[in-house]
Image (cartoon, rainbow, N blue to C red; front, top):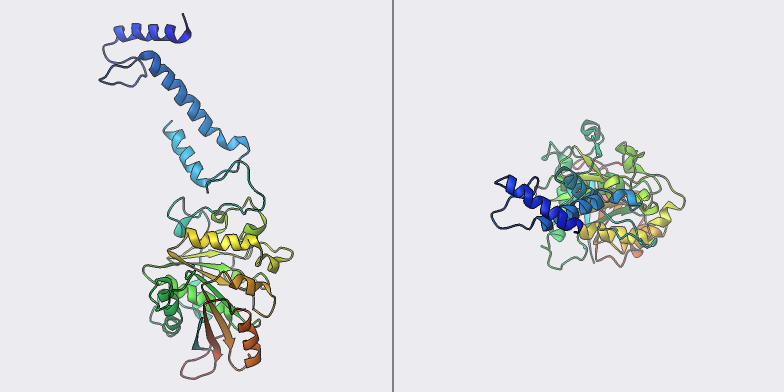
Length: 353
């Protein structure tokens, strides 16, 4: 007599001894073959063992899969416009040329857990430095940035006469360093975050100055460069949720050799495409190096839907600006923003150190 037959016979004996069911067998009103039930329990046990032991097999751990594992354990995206302003399911064998899969997280994804990392923006410090205070939507600077963000929002929502491809990818740059691009990038992101139905991811892609990351005190956090050079780092590892609702940050990350060149790499292209496709309901704002400082930002510009070029009043010459704009002719929508004006009516802007 086989093991299954003996088990079946024993279960029949137990069934006679008890009027309802047999041990840990599922109770059902329809006939159940005891031997079949025993096999099903054995299969469930093997499957559960296979699931819970998955991370130990040397495959990289996916947070989405991990969540399912834990559950199993507990329950066995031109025209030029001038504006003046004052003052994954991961395969077991990976192609090394393909970047690490991006896992939706927090405000940026509809699936998966929220980012574990958070950062508290020093809003009073930012306000004193001339930045938008999210709690004061009717402030002077807030009203001024509404003029800048409105075309961005309209393009993103498809409300312009001519549709803009990749409308959720916004690049903020300048011709030369020190014109105020990081100041504009952060204020633009803060202004967009004040929209009731739009969220924003602000990405520090200035691999030369780290202005945004230093200002916000996140220069030591993992970020963009880590994602580009280390396949083990997931986007969920680098995203930072903030105390400003609907605003998430991606720091520049650890310093790397030839960091600027990474902006023109295929890995960066894939990263931008993946972020934009996964988060179609979010606006991505990239603060990048100046256009004339290196050729790579112009390459990155080819993947953008809109480019905002910050121009410093009384400093940037027509020739310099023309040369800068000539590098981004491929972008369908380019906006220039005049910064650091000295008009008494409008005040003035400056870039924080």
